[in-house]
Image (cartoon, rainbow, N blue to C red; front, top):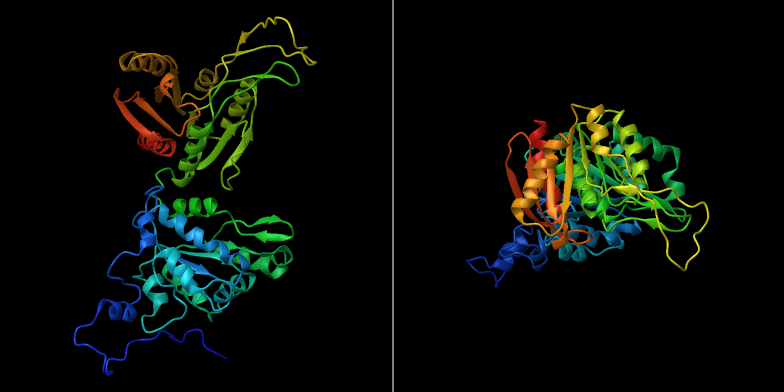
Amino acid sequence: MKSPLKDTRDYPDQNSPDSEEKESPARAEAANPHLTPNPHPTLWIQGQKSSSLEGKTIALGVTGSIAAVRVVELARELIRNGAEVHAVMTEAAQHILHPDALHYATGNPAVTGIGGRVEHVEFCGLKGRADLFLIAPATANTIGKIANGIDDTTVTSFATTALGSGVPVMIVPAMHESMYRHPAVVENIRKLKSWGISFIGPKLEEGIAKIASNEEIVLEAERILGKQALKNRKVLITSGSTAESLDPIRILTNRASGKTGKELALEAYRQGADVTLVHRDRLGTAGIREVFAESAKEMTEAVLNELENGYDVLISAAAIADYTLEPSPEKIKSGGELELKLRPTRKLIKECREQYPGLVIVGFKAETGVGMEELLRRAAASLEGANLDMVAANDVGKGGMGTEENELYLLRRETGKSRHVSGNKRKLAASILEEVAEILK
């Protein structure tokens, strides 16, 4: 049986006539393939999306599932968020994806065998370089081997070493659904979870346990490797617009897109929080609990019901309707003038503060056509009048609703100071939650 630990790299012959006294960069790279003299062109994209994984090294284990074809883009997504990635391939994986493809994807030569560098220890040993060992995709075979202490491939060698060294391990299964439901596989996954190993996915459809999306995998990596400023905190977030029924077909709503609320939910999750998102949309991210609420009344009742379960923070980012009406039971015929009688809706923040005086509450204040001083004055009035811990204020007449970029003024009650932040909504969400973490200290 061929040993998977055999070092199959070609090294230069130092005794050959072509050998030079001074080692060339090409020879240096061949002798030490993990240290290159110049950055690989792939690394030009490093950190372009975010710096959430900056300074983190991820060993990416690839096994012999057809889902291995997805790993090139996964590696690049990790890099776009700042990570350094080193691929580790089983022999079976190399039948599906050439090591050069992962060299291209990561900017580092793929590890295809354990050699004199003892790569499994170099990366996942007690003083190893890796902050995370991510196996994506993971076959039933590899999961079974790890669960039973079998170590006969590069990936299982890395896993054994990581588990013995306390390096976090994440597994992303991919196989046929019938294999995934096998009692032994079910038991192996349960066993590995009891060891503290995280599992992401799979998505069951078409008779296949499909690999999780790249976005979901990256998010879980961010959660594990992030600073976790909100760990063990429960955060409730409202998001987007509400809709008031006019008749069975028509609704009255507003222009809020819900992008800020979604980014707040994702960022709170990255920072270790237990997150619930109340909205009339669908985020579809495992780990974030979603509650559907369409009207202002439904949202208010949903939030009050949730708060009974005990939360540390409520972030009221939704643009909740100020007015509602009695809907027509039948479709209103078109043509001619139509008069609507509107009545005020319940005030969610007011009711929440009355029932939960110790709850940290963050509100949003949207105005149009006002200067900075007037905006801050109105935000301060809302801060005091609603007894908020913080308010995020902006002039939506200048943009923000439905856009990718926005600017906000963050006012905290305890300090009385404002902070100006601008940029994409992910950046704004991070700024808001940074302030929330300070309030909770």
